[in-house]
Amino acid sequence: MKNIPRIYIDLPIKVGTYIPVERDVLHYLTRVMRTKQCLIFGDGNEYVAELSSDNACLFVSEQTAHTDPSNDLILFFSPIKRIDDLLNMATQMGVAAFQPVIMSRTVAHHINWQRMRRIVIEAAEQSNRNSVPNILPVKKFQELDLSGIVFADERYAYSQQSSEKNFKSKLVMIGPEGGFSESEFSALDAAGAHSLSLGKTILRAEVAAVVAVSKVLE
Image (cartoon, rainbow, N blue to C red; front, side, top):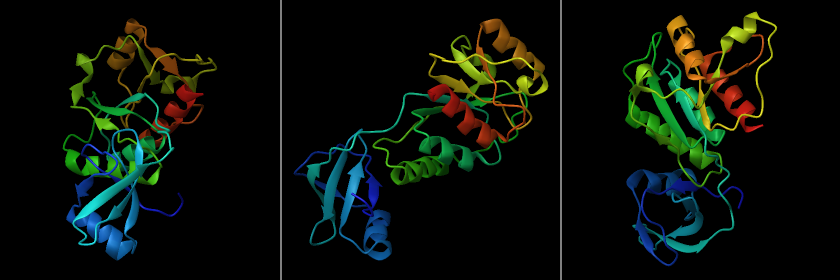
């Protein structure tokens, strides 16, 4: 259904039931989009809904045949200055969950994670997903099990070596804006993590996230 607003609902959804409408959703539908109809999602499925006569609730009339295009990748990343762009783009790529990791060269330590949650919700609504990716609690690099991770290895930009292909792992990691430190490279190599080349240029972290995810999904 083209041109119909899509709304994320963080509540159980069943056909034939009424769901309370939050003020911002009501404003968006009636003032911005000027419609009473919308598509709602939140449990991996999508439904057709319409505002009640008093605009207090959404009535769920039917489930659509639209399947969730999301994947099961988990993206490990270091919080960066343009973290909103990273989360937005990776959500559009279908990433299932985000794992923030504090690394040696992490520069953005104070993130408004509630705002980041709103960003991934909006990205999921706009990208035709039926689910919203989880943002997991922040971890330190030293706390991670690195053995099954595919990581974007900028060392390939300085060599002629080819990277591996056909990765089976669903765990993808990118480094911070300054790149992985030598000790982090050593830890990844020692754990048997799979290195991935993103080409001969050094990419911004938010771009590297999209390229790494796309290469693993190939």
